[in-house]
Length: 467
Image 1 (cartoon, one colour):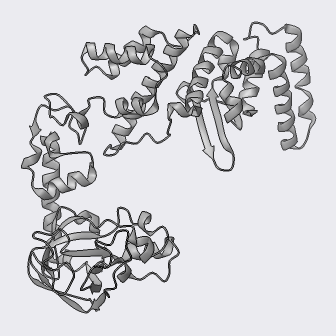
Image 2 (image 1 turned 60 degrees about the vertical axis):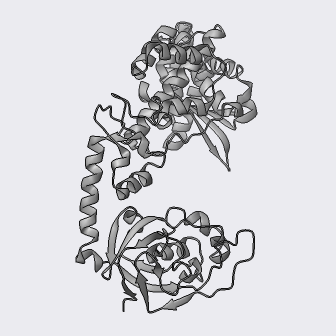
């Protein structure tokens, strides 16, 4: 493991000592430092001059025992020398910027960077507890048993909720660290009482017995696990697990407290589908606040009027149409694909509630979700370009209608019209394992979230290729 220092941090720490702010620095050494510091000014080349200043400052940083303080702390954490390639220290611009980070890459391995204010070098009583606390963070991140992941995002959370979850997570983690340090008879930056005050402020919506229980488990308990801390920080009210709208609890969508709940089961199907697409963990039994319901109802009305308008119909262009009389992949998992040809058509008959006449899914099941499938040509063009599959052909996906000018995912949960025929967008046509065989390596993973649109046919009519 290599130790590295930011030039500004070393220079500021050296000047701090030379200015008499560190108590154990002899005056004779300060005068010698000032004399030696005049020499680099004679160097004309600016790069060489800066390098000379850094070398001089680093020598005095070591002479005054500042590096020895760091090394002594590093020795308390054997995992550092085993796991880190570089441990770097840089100057923080303010208290909010202080802290430790871990960077991992295939080229350089694991590198830790600690940002701190130079003023901390004035007194070991300020420096050591801070660094030991931050080193505990790094040690947890390096320890496989902790299970750390830098991805703190939770499905269904907006940016404000993500930021709040990160702040809660950091608080919980800090509590466990200072609890462990206190148990080891080490000095900490924060006392049990100060941490408890911050904890009560962040989780004041819990009952006092609940706060007592959780705080004690964090402060007095064994070494924590990242997933457990993240679960508390991301969903402290356990809204996603209780599945019960409680007076004063937060709405599972906007995360604002509410006493005015709307029953999820009373929502129109298209709105429930839209909420489910944006918040995968939501269920109608959880409900939603009346404000969110109003927002989704207004958005649904606006989108429906737009989707059914003639202006929008003219924006969706059908480039290619395909049908197949039999299944090649459906029902063939673990077996060779079927040999039914897919046939390109200039036009196809849509039969309401039944499907495309002549296609394998015609009269397949009552109220079948995939009576017709749409696929975006813009998405297919991007797939060929990004996966370097110039020979891939649309018919290999076995979707029916390839269109331009439509955001297919936006049609999930809504009715819309193309060439006078009305459809109900049901769900994404999720890519299956056969995509790797039909299109090429990486196709299935790449198509997640953009595999096309499965629809029910609401009115009879004919779809034709646009000229």
